[in-house]
Length: 119
Length: 361
Image 1 (tube, chains in turn cyan, red):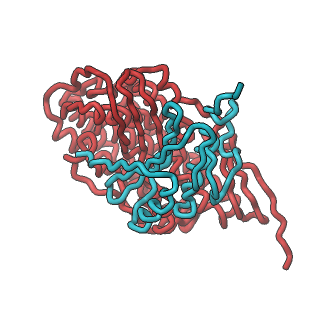
Image 2 (spheres, rainbow over the protein chains, first blue to last red):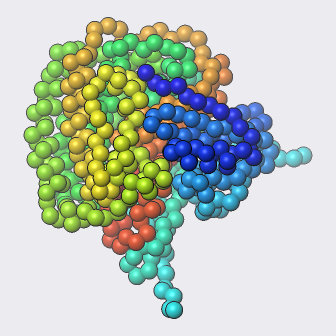
């Protein structure tokens, strides 16, 4: 009934080429999200084509996480990437538009998971 | 060449046309918008974070409270994700009841939007008539769930409440009776010159742009994209005969037409679900704890919602992430605002049917 989900883990340096391949094959970017697991941050890039679901996962260290922007391939990615930056502290390089931490204007200072302070 | 003087006007977070806060910095040249810079987070509630304190059974109540308009579908989508991870076989009757409550949510949400849109372009009697009919849908929801905003009917493994076959037949009869009134109401949106003046040719998103920018729901279908997550076949939608409503013009009027037609489609889907409502249990006992992950997708009134659940084998989940349809439709909104006149901005913001409450989960 609900179709199979294709979950693929890739290295950060493969991200742009993999995303470009999906774009060229007609996939739609559904969403990008972060999950903090122990001392890593998982970044999920989800795609759809004709209701079939594909997810690319990149695993980053939680200490000073950084990743390339895919907004040159999918423009709307810039909103998810600004969200990743504001809420999870992920440094996203070469965003089409960088709101510089003003996309989320929460009353509590973001990111919500700042790196542990060094003693 | 002379540079035109630019003015930045803050739109929101408090604005008469916005029931909930979103902020746009509108960069204007005279009366024309040249750029819109969004910011959100004014009512960020941290509901995803609550998963650390509520176990996976209790979290259904939190998921339902992410939105006050499509609360049932939020709860249901969360439950579907957990059920997929735990391989729970939900009874067929519960699947059909989920379809019925989902479609009642869609009808009341679209009627709410019609009212808000009428209010935005100053047609106050149309606003009141839309909400008058919506009130009757809320009555049905209250009769079947006990709540008007939060249904409290979703649970992992099925639903909490049943509706008898007789009651459902009566509800379908009532909905068929309301169809005439809804037709009279929507005819004004379809034919009235003043409405068409505000909507036709305003805020055009081409099919290519809508796809490239990840538009979802009526925003995508109004631009000719055939995409409706109900076609995934979750709940009992695989047993319902329907096709996504699509318009091709891509303007505000097209998005309005999609929503109007979806009201009648939802009434038909409820009638079909009632016909096919099988006897049997409405839930199954859930034992154990989830271990694994799943991306559940559903079609809310505003479009595709995504629930990503990651479980670790304990009763507390590692992650709940909700991508709401409004978040996906911010990119198309930023595309249609440049070039629009300042007076059209409220209408354009409303045409994506923004639900900031969801987005600020």
